[in-house]
Length: 568
Ligand code: MN
Image 1 (cartoon, rainbow, N blue to C red):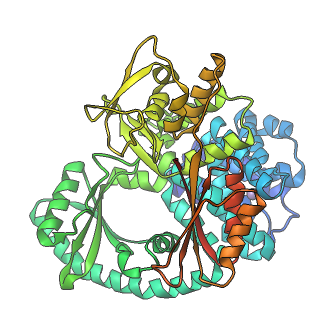
Image 2 (image 1 turned 45 degrees about the vertical axis):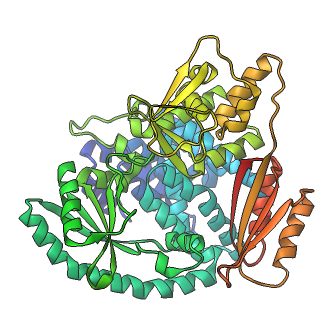
């Protein structure tokens, strides 16, 4: 791509003349530095930083981030010194390039490697979100060109993408990127399943779209009659990998996956969203339990929309998603939308993000600062589970959203407000009623923590906490008082979905024996004959649990491994 083409693309994306002028030297420097280098595809290497920077530009990051994306491989590939970058492009760009380079330099192999990348990624997140975004876009372009890598490398990169990069994009609310990463990784991780699913879904998608096309004029007419102006009507097709995950959950039963295609209606304001929902329900009967109001109660990552499923014409099931233009923008850009240029043209800096919806980022950053010597391996893996587990969102009495992992208790809630609130907690009200410390919170619960000056945490609190944040605070409090934290050991339940074949059970059991873990109970679930489930229970094996899970995943014919721990 020539500079002229590049600058036109930036212009179209809304970058100012000043920005473009600031980015130009980085473009030229990268072009010159990589000039004798080639990608595996045989293309000039420079095409890579250009693609990465344009992916970043689509999320409307600032000019420094674009420059850093252009320069992100000059240190590692061409031995350019950070000092040189500092001199030519300033401190900010140099800092970003250095941080991205650090995430890249992973030395270990196997599980250690995974831990190392995780640690580096979390460090980057703690420093500056732009670094993580650049890494995500770097990975996106590497996935787009993965076919040119050696098969063994393809496998590792694709697995890592599913394990780390896609969940990260999800947590940052960049769902489009998350879906792209997953769909790009899927054929490399499970080629046969990918081909099978693709052929299954294609016809369903086509029929679904045809149905929506038919309904569209009716919807438009009725909305107009009610005085609702529709900005846009789009058809959203569910991504292959998310269909796959749903199939695994629903015993491979295609009929239970309703939302392969949905009609997405974009309107001007919130009132019109609800009006639209009413219009649709007047036209067709809603399927019970499928109406979701993510406007009144946004998802923890900020996602807002109304969802509903209706019994359409000819008894066919139809999905609708309704949202405003702003919500749509948010869904496209995720967390990046929060530092896009505002109307006055002034730049919001990353450190100033204080939007409630992404409060977890600043909370995470603060927490990371407090654990400077951290993270030990175990803590890091704990944190990964905390971080990527299914989330719930509970509310403070003032309506602030506290984002917690599934299974969290009022104790977790208290520590997530502030460690002092946790340490002094003597009671909790959930939805206005006194609740036990062990209560498992649900999304939408309003939780009020009652504190008392002389109250102190006790060892048994550890049995009712899910988050490493709360556990660490309680442990360090107990340690200070010279008490030994006594924990009741937990049960770990591992559900393995596997293709039915001789010897699979034996191979799974061997994994447990290898790590000297006794299987206390084994259940089998043959509801789906082709893909039975094996459910192993054992005493929570601590740091080995992660190794067991990853070893199980590597067994031939295993489709999915899920773990859940619960107190005995
Ligand atoms: Mn790169």
